[in-house]
Length: 231
Ligand SMILES: Nc1nc2c(ncn2[C@@H]2O[C@H](COP(=O)(O)OP(=O)(O)O)[C@@H](O)[C@H]2O)c(=O)[nH]1
Ligand SMILES: [Mg+2]
Image (tube, rainbow, N blue to C red; front, side):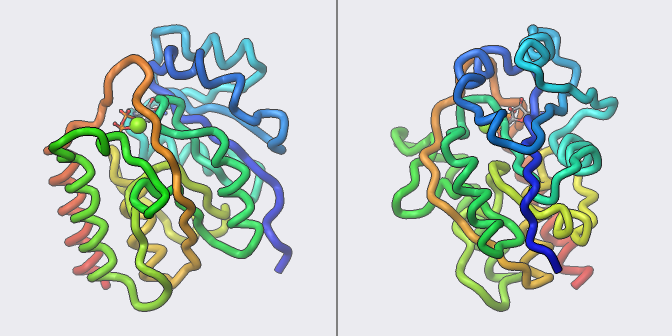
């Protein structure tokens, strides 16, 4: 089968004007074969700014990052999908590195916030609640579903690339913020090749996170149990 080579960079946005304003010039839009955005009801000028930079915007009807991932994958004409969220957490410089991992044979390439050379947004804080929860879910996912390949250090970060073929195979139906976790779990079950690169996570630029820790955590437990039952 031909190696994947055509890149589709998919920007996910929901009122991300501040992040976009400072990041847009660093996003390698022209180096991609295709770049478009999937937006949910932004009212802060996000859509207009994207269009000013020649980036086509698809509008979501249903909210949720999971839905945005599915729309992005369905609209993409490339066979390498890169998901980028312009909230300041994700360093655009990682985009070519993620693509290289896929071109070198990975089905999924994850920008990990938890490798020795990584930084996580909470690393400067004493109580790293989100980091600890992420590490706990990641440990459970490895324990329950990893049968080969290296330990995955960050099963949750949404900053990742995946081949279109792998995305379609995984048939992801999660809602809300759970699609990345479900994607990693199902990829482990399918023994797909998952590669990680260390990322330096930046701090959020403007706005506020829409992912509420406790409901998101409970939904992760639900999806984990569901994948265990449907082994
Ligand atoms: N397209 C789309 N993007 C979303 C949606 N919800 C969040 N995002 C984007 O996903 C990224 C991460 O969301 P955020 O709420 O900051 O969650 P956190 O990074 O986990 O704290 C941001 O760039 C948001 O703009 C959504 O429903 N649709
Ligand atoms: Mg974020």
